[in-house]
Image (cartoon, rainbow, N blue to C red; front, side, top):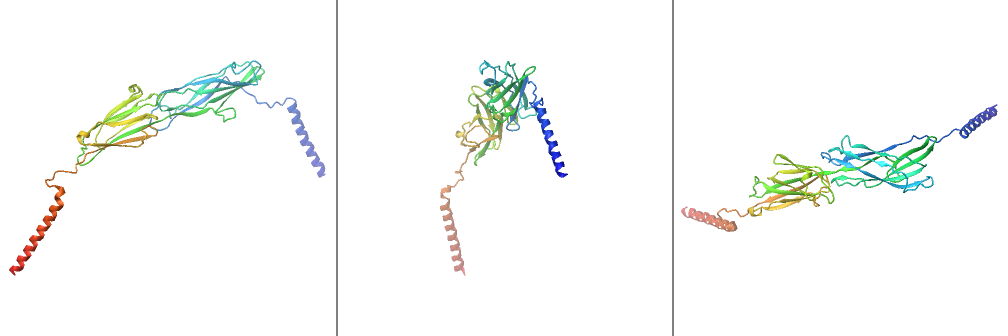
Amino acid sequence: MKMKKIAAIIFSAAMVLNMGAVAMATGGDTTPSYTDMKTVTIKKSYEATNPSTTSPAETFGFSIERTSVKDAAAGVATGNMPLPTIGSVSYEKGEAGSETKSKDITITLPEYSSVGVYTYTIKETQGLTAGVTYRTSDIKLVVTVLQDEGGYIRVAAVHTEDEGGNKTNTFNDNEYSAGSLAVKKIVTGNLGDQQKEFAVTVTFTAPEGKEVSEAISYSDGGTDYTIPASAWTSGTATAEINLKHDETVTFTNIPYGVTYTVEEADYTSDGYKTTYALGDNNKKIDSASDSVDITNNKNNDKIDTGINLDSMPYIMILALVAVCAVVMFARKRFSANR
């Protein structure tokens, strides 16, 4: 009885498997269905490296090149295969790192006259804005054209490196990086005038081949100032500031890569010795903050007191001898009188 039940179960299972095989052979098509894609979207994200910085308005542009084609009809080659078009993406001032940091770039696919696998290379245009990081690695676009009853179906995919790499449509390579420079005054010495104002010139130089597109801000004596983008001449801009003891002027929103010099007016005729202490010896903005301390020392260790201080030890010895002599004389007289 048990053997009959087991045989029945095996027979039923075989029938089910056979029916599935027949269904697949007679029209059970397992090929995935696709929808024709007219466009494909790349997501761009524009970040800010440091908070409290203001990114300049920026447009990121792209180019697209033919790379290869395979499985296409005779006569379709890399040089004559259809070429997609790609747009650009623009950001307003201050959008880096904001709620609107992510935007879409649309690629419009062409019409194809043959099935095949069409591969393209997308490159980001290397801009000139100082402090902005541009994508340097290529993006691959692969368009697979399939035959369909109504014509052709385009299926597009975006790759980070090549066809065997990780696929993504979000790219976070773009950043705006800017930092600050704090210039501080320190006056030392017994003749150092801590109420005196010292004139200082700060000169900024843009990285070679780059342009500073956003204002650098600072405050001097309670008044706010800016170095606008229009103030840069031949890649340099300057600011004249005045500092008293323990005062600091901080320049903000300086793009990474900008170099600087800090030079004080000559006060040697006033008896001051000037020294500089740099927070970063390369004199380049490449972090969130940098600093320069300027110390002016004026000291007099030969103050006129009316007595030659070099003779003071001998004078003290003579005075001590005189006191001892007086004491001894007084004691002798006191003993004689007794």
